[in-house]
Image (tube, rainbow, N blue to C red; front, side, top):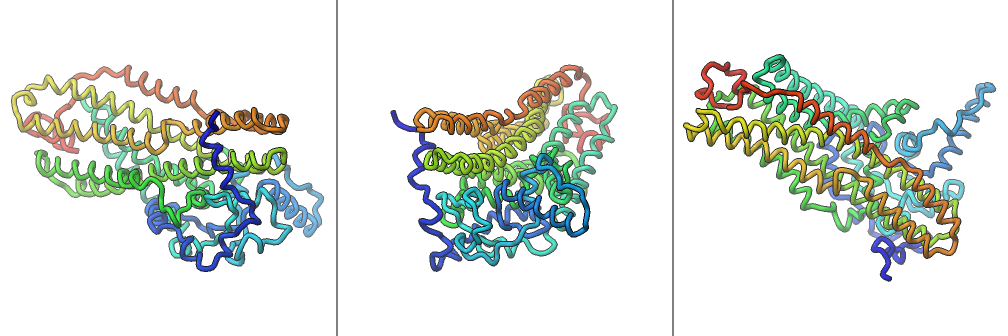
Length: 497
């Protein structure tokens, strides 16, 4: 029987002693990552307040260092307090938020002292071929992008973005609140605002987690996904210097769809709208284009992370097969991999829990408007008004459909746990062929103890939105937008905003 594709890569895994890419002459320029990757992070304000490439240690080594450091502090100050328990230690905080030493002084993996080396620590430097390859910020090209003050600047820009979105959401809320004839319009506006606000708010949570580093930060560990250190680890599994960014077709699609949607909206305002172009209209169009581009690049980043995990899981399976029976080493590698993967799954569950109800609400409100507007007299009689409303309807459906399709393509579905399920299936397959049944039982037991995600919460979000919508009774709604002649008794502010 032919083995699973995930199991065929074990022959390409090499021991760290076989070769070291950092020792090959002339590899410095070839290790530079594409500039477009750093530009995407810069545009999304994802830069860090400190160095982004630091020394890496497995969780056991970090806990030992942490406890030893606390013990030395206690001895220095003459206190009898015992060091904190390891139960309160967040792996993701220790791995991605601690202020470790930079790697500028390290020229290759073999130059790391024996006291700082272990097999699991070596795994944290794996490249796309499963070889430990130590690098620094200058090697991969991030040094010139992540300059001093980048972290503070990114936080200020995110706060500015959140303020703009807050204002954009308050304007229609104040204008349309408690107006029964504007219920549909308010719901459509609210859906759009929630949708484009998702990334800036999630990114702001990531910044708060990075700055706090307290035990309370463990409650939103999913925010580590937007930590630039986490993203750099993801990138090292993709051979970016030679192959470039994965899925360039999707990157073009994510950037292009935002431009097309905003261009279509501008065309409607210029050619079919009867409303005046005001400074507010111009500002909202420009900010809308920026936030749509941010969403498109953010969606591509989800695809980038997902592709990285698919490559890493292949390597881990091959490593487990090659090192069968060495339980401590294999469990350490498995723990580090699944901790990062579970963090990504939690992030995607939260993202889907926000996005999917918005899509459901957008579909229902657009369909309701299309159904009701078909019976409006002025739309039936005036071809010009009918064309304008048809274009507005197409714009709404284009935004909804393209957002759903692009997100589905980026994630490979509406949840990310299918990667873990496939990994577990291959692990069980290895168990049936392995020589150490107890070893494989321990590994599969560790995998099965992982949380299964927030599917119940996800479903409750969807059905709550549908239930709330079912309670509305739409009647006497303003259905014709951007056409004053169709509703002369309605104020310009209600018609044109």
